[in-house]
Image 1 (cartoon, rainbow, N blue to C red):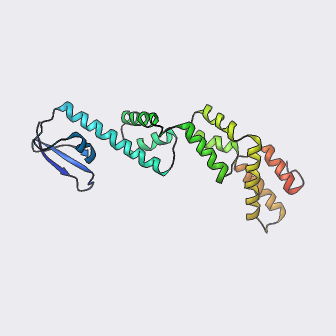
Image 2 (image 1 turned 135 degrees about the vertical axis):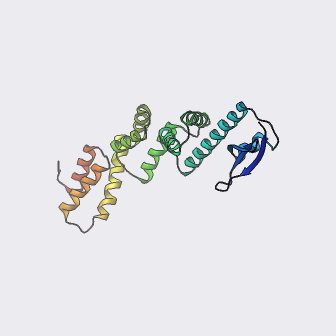
Image 3 (image 1 turned 90 degrees about the vertical axis):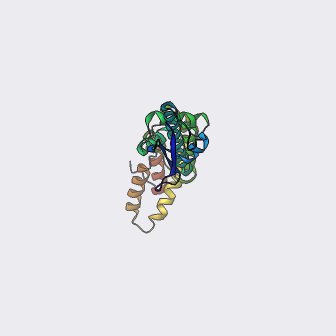
Length: 211
């Protein structure tokens, strides 16, 4: 089989169409073509063609994964799901994830550490909700528990609850006391804080214990 034409695609200028013996054969990313050193007039076998297509999909899948990771860190499951939704093949996704994990771009323990650090710094919530959200991202249970034990102990969670409560109370300024108390309790519960922490804060802010 001889390559008779190489043409940039109109809808995607980063890809090229390869024509073999005068007919469309397959397409490649321009960077894959450049690395292959293919030129018009070259002969290609079916085996070489399949290898090129496989390399091309790996490159496209990897590059899309890099794009996703450039926006924010993601768990392995999140990244896998997004790549699958984009239409990449399962086997290629597995290869790309292995490639990224070997190079430290995908690391669920690092992801959880950063996730919890962000919560502590700017998005206070209780351990129960943190665990729930991380489970939704299919992070290994042992990793979740180990990181939360290290960074979200009872004392830290109490500090976070007080920080969240005081901010919420400021928002509710002007409402009747019973309304503030009820809404604050609901707010802290929805944020996943430990019941004992909520009870103690309610006693602190409102003297009595609402139970």
